[in-house]
Structure formats: C-alpha cells, structure tokens
Amino acid sequence: MTDALVLGGGLAGSASAILLAGAGKSVTLIERESGPHHKICGEFLSIQGRDHLEALGIDPVALGGTPIDMVELCSGARLVRSRLPFTALGLSRYRLDEVLLESADRSGVDVRRGIRVTSMDGHRVSTSAGGHEAGAILLATGKHRIRGDRTEADGGPDPFAGFKMHFRLPPSAHRAIAGTIRLILFDGGYAGLQPVEDGTANLCLVIRKDRLGELGGSWDAVMAMLRTLPHCGDLLRDAEPLMERPATIANLAYGIAPRPAMAEGLYPLGDRACMTASLTGDGMALALRSGFVAASCVAQGETVRDYHRRHAREVHGQVRRAMALQHIQETRLLRQAGIGLLAAFPGLLHHLAQATRLRRWS
Image 1 (cartoon, rainbow, N blue to C red):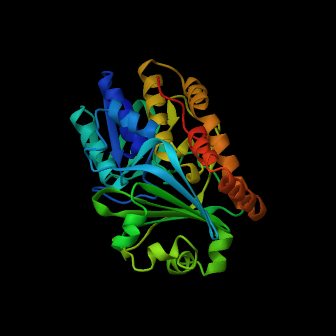
Image 2 (image 1 turned 45 degrees about the vertical axis):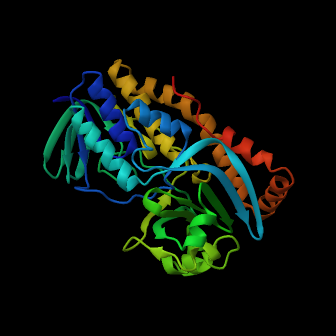
C-alpha cells in the first residue's frame, strides 16, 4: 500500500509524482513504455508551462528548448504575423518526458517502466507485473483505455485524428520558421510547424475523420495535401522525415472530459481531465497544471470532488476560449472572415494569444 499510485509517466503524471514525493508522500509511478518515445503533441511550451517546469527544478532552456516569440497564421494565400506576448519554447516530448521521469526517480518516486496497467477496481490496480493498492490513484494514461476505467471521453460522430512527424528542413525553410510557430488552417483541420531542439522541426496536425477519408486515409495522402497549400508546401517539399513513421492518434475528444461516478481517490489528470484545442498551443501547460492541482489536493487530504472543483477553476476559461476559436476555424466563411480581420488588425493575433493562456499558478 502506497500513499499515491500514478498511472502514466507523461507531463501530468510525472509532475504530480515529483510534487507528492516532495510533500513526503510515498509514490509509485507506472509507465507502460520502457524507454524514450514520441507522443502526439505540438511541443509548444507556453509561458505557464515553462513556469511549471522551473517550479519542478527543470530548466527547459538547458534541455535545448528553442525560443519561439512569433506566431504566423495561414489560410489559403493569406498569412498574418504577430509577436507573441511571451517567449515560448519548442521542446520535444521525446526529451522532456524522459527528464521528468528521471527527476521523479531522483525525488524518491518508485518509477516502474515497461509495465502495462490491465484493469482497475476501486483502489486496486492490476498490471502486467502484479497488483497495487494506493490511497490515491492518479490516472494520467492519456488515450490508453483501462478495463474498469469509466472516464473515457468520446470524440463524437466525426472525431479528430492526429499526426506528428519530426523533420530536418532545408536551410531556407529552417530560416523561414526560426523563432516562429506557423499555424496552417485548412478544410477539416489545421497543422502547426515549429522548431524544436537540435535543429529539428515538429509538424503536428489534427484532421476530421471524414476529411481524412476523403483524402485517402493515409499519412502520405495528408502530406500530399499539405504540400499543395501556400505557406506550407514550400517548407515541406524537400523536408527529411526523422521518424520511421508518424505518431498517430484517433478519436480525439476535445473539451472538458465527462465526470461519471467514480471511486473516491481516483484523480483523472492530463487528457483524462480535459483536452484543449491544439490551435492555442497550451496543451502542455494544461497537462502540467492538472498535475499540480491533483498533487496539492492529495497532499492536503482533499477529495476528488475538491480536485474537480479546483481544476475547473484553473482550466475552464482557457478551454472555452480555445474551443470557440476551433469552432470558428472549422467554418470556412467564419475562417475567411477571421483571417481578413486579423490581416486588417494584426495586433488582434497578439491579444488572442494572450487571451488563450492559463492564468499564472499561485
């Protein structure tokens, strides 16, 4: 029996484990992957995400995080550019998640890797390596379904699918996006292209299932479509893929996750609690924030109800605003009108970037 059992070693899981160990709790963390691996993520670390990592004793700049202080929004032939109201970082989950797990281990967390969680029953968790019991279970498994877990969200009748690939860009393309995140809007989805560490560029996109089917249903078909788009195709034409295959995910359920009746002591974190529109680039910060809120609640002996209430205060405003922007982008007429407005008043893009941040953690 341990004080806290964390299921999942991503941003939310590792952050909560580190904080609980620092509060004197006994913590076991179970991660299904045995080594570094790529995850679907825009890898855009906003200012609140940076703050959370620094509070955990991690310097993302020292890890090679690439400064990003400009945003470009593209739709058709139009491109709108603005300075961000903060300096973000491009930093891969491949590197960041490993550093967080190493930090958890140094903090006294019992980190167990290469173990698959098979089922949950109250405070009892079964895994491929045996059973565990804990006073609090922090569920941070992302989209991995666990038997007995009733927190799974549904992406609806036409859900989004996600793709992510790292590229080595030609020198001219690399210079074009230096210090910049370029957001490319298209019918049925959008993509983000930005630098991360070591001269690498991350392309991450979401696309509606029906639109993906229209294109042929494959990564190659999606790439062929992107190469036809202005302000995108010229950057990707001679790009060298750095991953054997893209990371993929299906049935993305944006918004606040449903809260079915669940056992006291089960805290859903990260994507199990909410998933903000990727367009705003605050997903990493939201995942970390859920870990901070859950750790605070568990350390202070608060209930799951208290956790949901505190988490809602922290994230609901950001998620509502982000989802409103995503709905606008999905309607061609509204998207064109919005781009026209931003082209006429580029400063609005700066304010939108500020308005879709989490508030500072205190």
